[in-house]
Length: 203
Ligand SMILES: [Zn+2]
Image 1 (cartoon, helix red, strand yellow):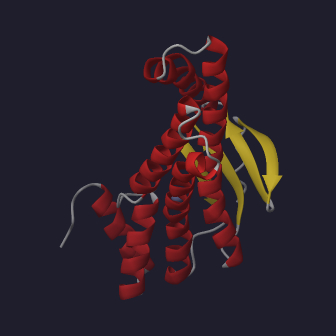
Image 2: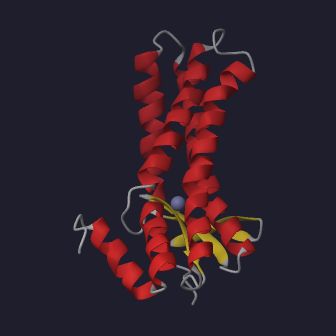
């Protein structure tokens, strides 16, 4: 099925996966850029020229969305390697989405594809926290250090948020894969995972 949406425009292809942007994403892009450059950094690090807040804000915003693309790309790369093709990733106002070509066909693959995203976010988060120390600017450039701390925090938060056990979050898919592997019943597993998402644990 062609999921291409007319509200989207294509950005670029990476590892055979088309990265696309929904127009609603522009809202969140401006919001993140504005809140970093005109809110967060001037508040936490007063006394810098305005232009530097915006440079730091642009770098932070770019890496923020790159983090989301990398998270989605990890689902796509694992999916493509396990015969669950993902050819398209969309960024929209609530984040990113990797479009599966068809319903998952085996529980083990579903588990790996779903788990890849939060794992990638955790690794990215630790990496971003480490960058200022690795490159030796943690004390010399505190505002730049705090961009990377912010990105570290965002990625850890993104990983944790995606582990919540509700559809269509990764946690819901992991839960479904676990129930599916145990019962061998995809439809029952889907219903159970949807119940968890609504807060009712069922019987
Ligand atoms: Zn994910």
